[in-house]
Image 1 (tube, rainbow, N blue to C red):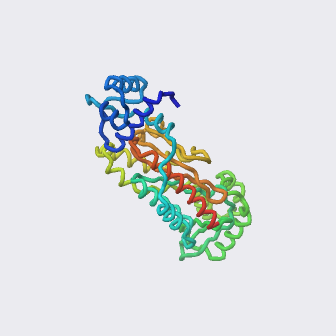
Image 2 (cartoon, rainbow, N blue to C red):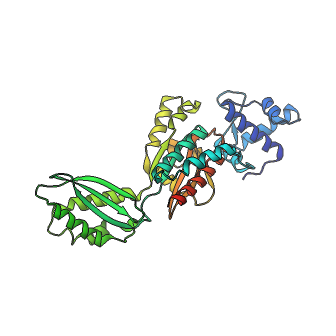
Image 3 (cartoon, one colour):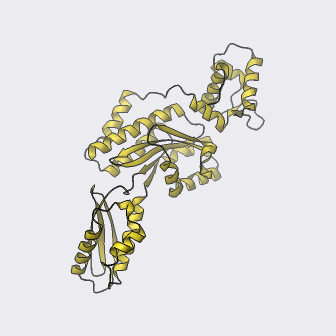
Length: 342
């Protein structure tokens, strides 16, 4: 963290929090008043100018006031003494909602995303754990008609992945049952994350021998397992961002929503979050170019042996103290709910 004297720390905090509150540049007199600094206006102007030279503040256009830079937000975040506490009623509401024993794990994750977006007024992004750490349990091929079958994968945790597939004429139910048993026998107990395309070719080659139509089953199995390995991205509350001045421009709003649709980029960013603590990416720190007008506040959570990530996404002019508290508590509550439902 950049070392600033006490006066400059107070001024930086004041400029950041006033700009977050008003979305307007902060003048030197207002900064001194809000920061309760009893020094001369010249001293305040000198301190603000020095922080501008350090790259912590900037002048927007010809405004007499200043706003924080991404670097200024970073120094502010790093010197936060503590996050804003959640009220006891808010904590109880979150625990009660996420701790409902009737909820499926996927529904709990969706609830967490919606609650986090509602609490903060920003978008929430959740990477639900993929299936890579689970063990392949069984494959079931269930006839749906003369030329269709329902293919269902079950894992050791009971998670199911299902999809209908096309079959050629003349495929009997007995053929489907035989193949289900053969593939289950060969893959049962394998870690889903280890079932690469090459591995499936080796293991299933014999089962699919002399049956050209079974290649479709093998191809579907690979596609579905590959999709299940990747964390599933859920976005909630994106509409909240349209109320922020930063995204009033149609071009900026379009770029933002395009970025939120880029699941590969989101998965990469969320996967890099360490297992402990709350982690923050601010503006230019963001590897995704279209999200560099934004900040992400992120935390990992656990679902048994698997790991997911929950985050909020908003403008760099974010209420960071509130954001950190909300993300930390929801992540902890989500981990507890997943343990209880296991």
